[in-house]
Each structure stands twice: as C-alpha cells, then as structure tokens.
Length: 479
Image 1 (cartoon, rainbow, N blue to C red):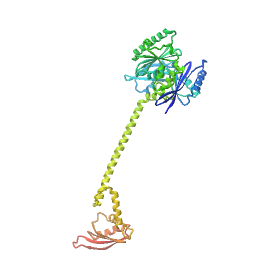
Image 2: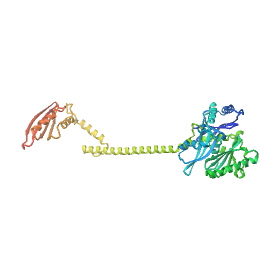
Image 3: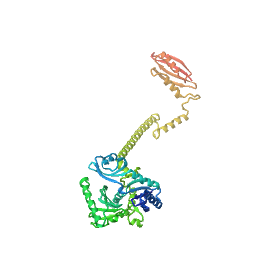
Image 4: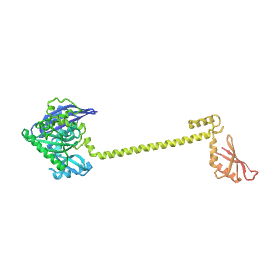
C-alpha cells in the first residue's frame, strides 16, 4: 500500500516542495515546484506563493512535512542526569528558562538526545509558538495540514546520513538568508548547531567560516565533551554556491566539500532530476523533508500532533517495551494454563474410559474384544430387550428396576433381612425372606407400605425356623 508525502520548505524568499509516492519498495517523485515569494513584506506574499505551489503539484491527501527556516529557532546544548525522556521533556523548559529570550509559555520545545555515561546530552530547539501558529494558519488556508513541523536544514543534515558512510562524522552547512547554519553530525546524531553570518567576498568568506567553525568545534570538545572528527563537509541551501564544492582535501576545514545532490542518488528513490530547479539544488531540502517521513528518520518535531512514529518510539520506548513484555508474559501464562488444563482433562477422560471398560468387562465377561465399551454395552442391552428380557414386566407398565429400587430405598440398612426369592407377577410381587424377629417382619411391611409403587402390602406367611433363631416370611406386594 502506498501513500503520498509532501516535503514543503519555507524560506524568506521562496517556497519549495517535492511530492513523493511512497511504498515498501521505495519512493517515486510525482511532482516538484519552486515558487519565489513576492517581496511585499507581508504574509500575503507567502500565501500567494503557497497557493501557486498547491495549484502546481496538487498535494491533496498527502502527509505534509513542513520545513521552517533555521533563523526562526534557538539552540542550546545541555546535559541532564535523567534516563526517562518523558521526564526530560517536562523539566527542559525550566532548565532553559534562564537563557531564553521569551517567557517559557510562549515557546515550543523539542530536543535530540544522546545517552552518554549514565546521562543524556541534549541539543534543545526552541521556537515561538506564535510563529508556528502563523505557519499553520497560512497552510490551513491553502488546504495543507502539516503532521511534522521541523527545521528544514536540520532534516537535510539528518538525511545526508543516508548517503554518508554509517556512523561517519560530518558537517552540514546550510547557506541562505544571510547566514550559515552549521550542523555537526557525530555518530549518527546532530550534536550541535551554530548560526554564523555570511561574510562577503570570495576566499575571505571561506576563511571566515573555517575560523568560526574551528573555534566552535574546539569549544565543543572542551566544554561539552563531544569528540567530533568530521570526514566530509556537505553544503546545501539556496546560496550553497558560496562554498565551492571540491573533492580535494583543501575544500573546507581541510575536508572535501560535497553537495546535497548526493541525496538524489539514494537507492530507494526514483525520479527525473533533469529540471533546472533540481540542478540548482533548490529542491534538495524539500526532498530531504519528504524522505525524513518515508524513511522514518524521526528527530525533532514542533507539530502539536506529533505524528512521527520514530519520535513517538524514542520518547515512549521504555513504556512500550515494558507493556509488550507484560502482554507477552500474560499470553505465555494463559497458553501454559490452557495446556495444563487440556492435559488434566485428557488424563481424566483416560481414567473414565478405563473405568467404563472395566465395568463392561465385569458385566460382559464373554466379550473378549473391547473397542467402544459404551456402544457395545448399548448393543448388549438392546439385544437383551429384543429377547424378551426387558426391564418391563409382561402385561404391566411397572418396571423391574423400579420394584428393586423401592425395596432398596424403603427397607433400612439397619434391618437384619435376607431376601431369598422374588416372584414377579402381572400385578404383584411375592417376596420370600428371613429375618430375626416377628416384629421385624411388621417393620418391613410398614416401611414398604410407604412406597408409592405398592398399593397394598400383605404378610402371606410368617413362621419360626426349626433352629428357632430366624423367622421365615412372605410378603405380597400389589401394584
């Protein structure tokens, strides 16, 4: 499934945009535009340029990444002894407050963090909320709603890591609007930003820039402990030509200078770069903004929606991992419980099957091959019923099992009686038995009269045995 991403860069003199169609296979450039801003000194000029740009590339439905000028932000380096990024975000405004030009509640904050020796080194960015609101209002007027608001040059510096060797230190210099914005990238992180004025006049400009950068990086090593060893200088921005590109070591700071054109060779990017706006490099930062979203590079974000997946992951990584581990443990525990329950159920079923088979063998010892004892028992009972040995008495609705049940239930276990014979008739049963006394015979008669199945109980005979120790008797049970 593909989605469209719009990289939109706003500068003092122009707006640039690149529209990408992104999928799992990579990104394809669908449209691009570079529109100068009329120099009328008001927001109307920017609004007019944005309207022209939207009409040119038709970005409806695209996820918008807005790049703002570097001169709209302030930068600070600091360290905090916390490991919780969410806590850092809460205390950062108070740490920066003494050095801020505006009250804390009028500024928006974000940062890039590097964990080092049990603490976090931060590169903090601040921007007036009023200015962010102005940009969002202008974009909303032309139908754009940026999901990410970020310094354009900062994103370009991060995107150059896609072309530089992995973890190699380098300097990215964005030149335009009367200043250089120099970004120091160290071990895959933007560690420092400095805004330097543009000197005039050929070689003095380069020498002036080199001197300022050398002093800055020496101070960074001494005061911040940042071990920065750049191997390359990348140059971008509308006035990048002020820094001549060179592959010789004498380019800048004794390092070769390369342009942001390297970003167009990114292996997951396809498109036509023959247009004049591409050749001048004026669209490279807008391309970097779009790639930052499609490649999930993350970084700072001044948007209140904070939709970047990488940004969310970096801030809530600990909580997400902890929750995922708890869910995994819960699932494993539930699965183990189900397995134990299933094993116990199988064991109980096996025991019941064994008991059924034992009862069947005891009841039908002539059967030597037991396959399904329950089904075989049902067949045996059906066969006995068909042979006339059913549970019902001939000519009667009374079942033999009910008569036996009544005798068992009504004669108490404490009574000494031995039943020797039971003669079943159509409407009565004659019971022959012995007991200890004549009174016991009367007791048995009285108990059986309580059974609902018997309408009348009569003592047919009762006499003493020759031994004189037992009484023989017969009971007629009518039903």
